[in-house]
View 1 (cartoon, rainbow, N blue to C red):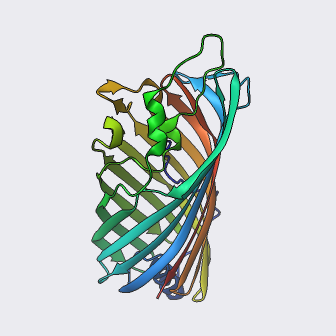
View 2 (view 1 turned 45 degrees about the vertical axis):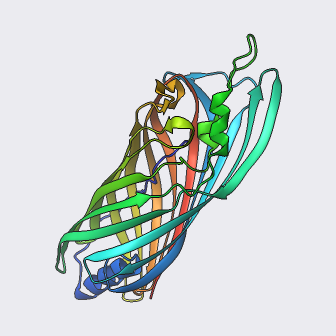
Length: 316
């Protein structure tokens, strides 16, 4: 199952000293994102990824039949902050994938859609310090992913056969499946550092996998992101921020019936721009694009050409 994290970014301009109003705006922006502030919040996030390039062991190869995978993951989430430090969030992904791939000497076109694996995540803000010119916060998270998504596509792993002379597919059942069929653990941490209008974000998340349906076990997955940003506008009513982040993922090969699935390992690094907007302490919105800088994979896989992300959060 192809899974890559969201990255953020864009370029920064010259900083100017923050004022007392800037501090109010930064505090309101944190509340709008649901980072702090007691109460309920909900939102939607979307990530579209186009896989149109083939690689074998990190080297690009000719895509002779034009195979591709377009993956759209729309995620609805609702959360509640019990206070400024502790909160809980439920994530419900809805997935739509369309693809074209070779199947022997024929071409297979199709779609796959439905609810993915639901997750419940708790977060705790370990430390926070904020003044007019400086902010530092450190948070940790932990949760559980439940096997709510269909694993019907994993059945393809049972009868994959290579036809001599026919093009090989880089899109398999583990790429198309909506769920893993396993109960998995999630742990992570993140920091936010601001000096005047400049800021820096950094975060990492580790998914601890268990064995799922059909004796298939997805490999543990490490994802990370981080990079600099700048508040272009800091007003009581709204803020606008630009950032440039590096993001990435490392995953070893999955296991199927005790054997390694050779075409599942990946180490990827992305760079891309993001623009964020907040209104008062209520609304937060963002949009970004991620472009691959380096992707090292095992065996033959289809890899991303680009990703487009968007998100919207409303905090009551």
